[in-house]
Length: 443
Image 1 (tube, rainbow, N blue to C red):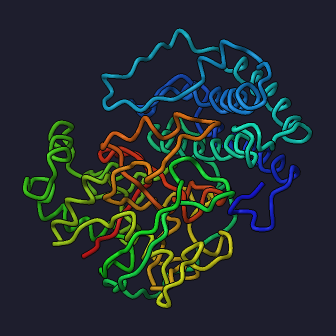
Image 2 (image 1 turned 180 degrees about the vertical axis):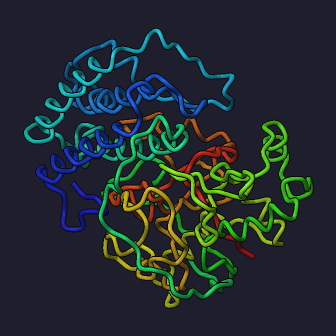
């Protein structure tokens, strides 16, 4: 079993510890909403909260136990009801069958049964067998662990949109804190022409859209040293950027006009000025923190600056390339992610000032390429040449190869360190406003 976060190899004991840590973190996250909000949909485009507490254990049972191990599950009704989430293009397409959702105690009981089954399987069953596609390289076992971590971030997007009266304030789930930013160099950085290697290494775990690897020639370009900040984006808002049709794509213009959007989703304006809608409280807009926006908003701002949003290949070149032509595993080098490298791993509920983690800068001096917010790219989400659906979750990527979803790279404050690797690709619709996603301009 090989995984980028375990360069010396991953053992059964590692998998069990990883699973237990993931379940413990999920429990802490599910303690944020008050009990009365359990059947609510904080985001209209997503299922209610109850779905996700059932989905996490049900996915593990469906994927590892039933599909990969070819064994029986626990509760067929639950394993169908909680099988898969939704990604509609509008709230009108969402069905909300509240009468089908079970009581929370029953969902928790199912989760406890699943935990016992999964831990026993990870600890003692044959979870790696090259003759079984789902077990090749322990694919299904690792997939259920990363899947839970991905949904922890999804849950925080949802809970961020709950009213403060429906949340129980929690301390940060990790202890690391950034150093104060005393001064930071601004402007753009020249990235010389070179090769960018996209995709993962054969034999190392990755999701299907990470394979096969692809080498791309990237021409010279300039890119912002730091992500665009709230303060910089405020200039665009004050200049009437949301009213200037020429700055927006057709899809972006239809989105902002159809939904009466005039500022980023995480901002709020009242008689006292602009505020940041933090996880647990409003705060004066932190002008030195990265702005969280949709790709449509990012591209409009970039056009306003006579610039554009980076492509996926350009992100790779800026993040992992070096002046010598070699490529790194991470922006800072080849050492796995640790708390000194960026705002990830639940160290903070919200973004911190750009440039707060100088130890995470790339070889070209570009900051925050992993952490503090996913990086939008202008690249539509699609498979690399030779793409094959993965055996343990064949519909993971293919439903989203529709030209409406775009690649994001890097990590956010709610991204677990195990998901931070060069090949990992996130994706969302270009007008999805709820995720922790920022951008930087390129020319």
